[in-house]
Structures are given as structure tokens and as C-alpha cells.
Length: 236
Picture 1 (tube, rainbow, N blue to C red):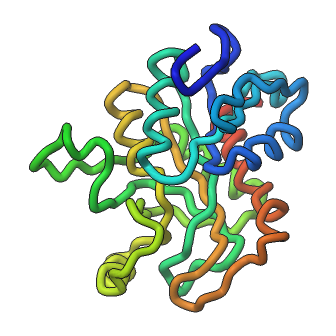
Picture 2 (picture 1 turned 30 degrees about the vertical axis):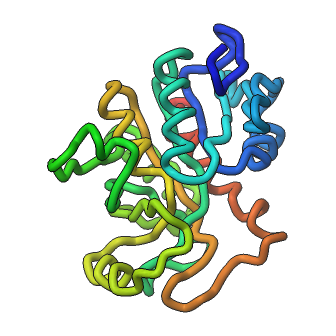
Picture 3 (picture 1 turned 45 degrees about the vertical axis):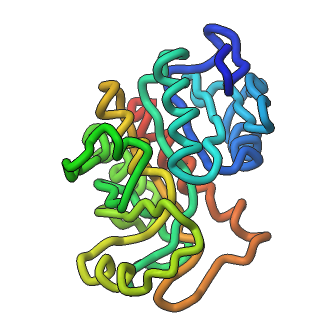
């Protein structure tokens, strides 16, 4: 048990999927896992452990933003022995060729600042995904015929951004989408020598203003979860 996670030793698997929304963790566990069991509900941040094709998996909420994710990822890695962490979440598209409901697999994550900025100080560190997970996720997406884009994303440290000039610069430089957690997840994974990946569903579009209705978001995220699980267990 840690400050923020009430699970007992052994209740968290080495592979952890991390949606931002704790209710999405509940939905994913109930939809994709067998024998799913609630192992954390401290501060309403739900976590479940169950089986996917015989493999133990934990699906645990991260909260919104890099600071919140950093708390849970640190404790999952340091105190519970998590070895593979995959963010599953939504993002906003920043390129014309990326459509609503497409999946983005994040190779790199650009950011203005993260909770790790105090460690890096003047260094412009370039956090990136684990190659084995990324390769397996791309293969899984291809097998399923899911429209998928692989490349750089932007992890914002604020939601209500008033920097349209910054968005324009990132679009010009090929950034595929924007979300709020992956960069710090990649930082922590590289620091602690574990594997990390972000698999994201496009829920809205910064260029066109298109967006998934709230009642369709949950049902549209199934491809993303299946890709993440197949990437974690490519032989299953």
C-alpha cells in the first residue's frame, strides 16, 4: 500500500494500462478482462487487475495531466514492480490527414514542461516510447485494419491553452496530436528502465473543430485498448 494506491503486494500486474479517467479504467476492465477485481479506489482513482488471454493485466486510472500521472506511475513502478506501462487515452488531432476515431501511436512526446523539468534543468531531454512496444502496437493496428498514425505528439501542461501560435508551429513541424500525460510517462519509464507507450484515440480535431459526442467516446475507444493489450502480449 502506498499513499495513493491501496493495493496489497502482488495485486498489481507487471503490465499496466493507464487511462486518465478512472471510470474508463472500470469500463476497460469490465469489457476486456476476465476475473477483473477492484484493487484500488483511494481518492476515487480506480484500478482493476484481471486476465487478458491468460495474461495478468492491471488497468489503473492516472488522472488528468502529467503531475497526476507522475504520482501513480512512480508508485506503480517503484512500489509495485510495474514493468510495462501503456497510456490509453484521447487526444486532439493537429494534422489534416488525421481523422476523428483514428488511433495515434506516440513515438515521441514534445512538451513545454513536465514534473521532470526540475531534474533536467537546462537540458532539452527528448522522451520517447519503447521500440518493442511501438513495433508491436503498429503490427496489432495493421492486423485489425485500424486507421493509425505513428509519430510525435505534444503533451500539454495546461488544458485551457491560449497559445494558437504554438499550435501552428507544432502543426507545421508534423506533430500529430495533443494530450496531457505521455511525455512524463516516457520520462519516468526511461529513468526507471521500464517500457512505456501511449496509444491514443482522436476524439477531437484542432484544425476542423470536429469532435466525438460524449456518448460515443467510450464505445469508440475499443480499438485503442485492443491494440495496447496486443502490444503488451504480442504472442497471445
